[in-house]
Image (tube, rainbow, N blue to C red):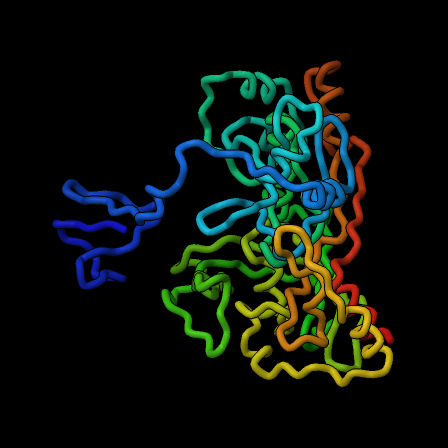
Length: 400
């Protein structure tokens, strides 16, 4: 929040002359910044959260793969990736403490965004010793960026670098994917990173498979009123399709999709492959381009959910309900057993099920022997994460 004595635009100014600012906004001479009182309440030093044995076992069981360079986990729905105000437990904090093992550095989801890991613009799949030289410079205070992340209510494969070097190489891999796709480099060259999500959507696309290419940007509306639906803990920021890229800031977004299976009940299972990495890309492309919002997505599919009707329970479904009659509580307060299409308010049905990426550990070994390493020539690592309980239950119900 900022207050100003000089001329400012009158957009979003309250009665006291205050208005919200973003990181990109410039300050004028005489401006004053007002911080929320919660800032004072935050501790100056970050304290580690100590889990009990059940919670520690839960965190360890999330692990799908581990080598000297990376750790791969199957993120459960409802667990936020990144900490912040109002978030007691996050995956990055838990991993830093309980997935560290014998490594001198905690695993991280970030890499230095300014590091020149991508050695040549014309050949973005090359990494060189220049990257290691930059990372070893202790005076290099460049901003950290997320390698990749999943929304709080989504689930599936999440990659963490075990060192700053491996995290930075991961950052270059995810950046190269978006860079190449944004420059129409999606058909002729081998993709060094492949991600496949499963989603259950309301309705069915007109075509069984296709390529969505639609730019995304923040919604122009500052306030969004959704009757009887609270989205994202009260936050109203939305991403939407940008019709005119000349007048509105946007990012190019490309998604491949194919129908896995259709149901007579009006649902469709989709496989979604994002070729770019934009915020809420899959959710917006499903809701606004395919006109098939994802089940449990109340932010982008609230209109469809206003008409939500539970399926008629067959004998098989009643038996499934009986198995859930004595639902146990899960660590960190997670609700991992409800939320299928039988519930009045189903959980988000979006899961990162499969991922293929270069062997980062092998790439680091090759850099010890040669001046550079071509990631596209390395063997790929393939990971598969089983569906979360609520999605598996929906699958079983629709196939019963």
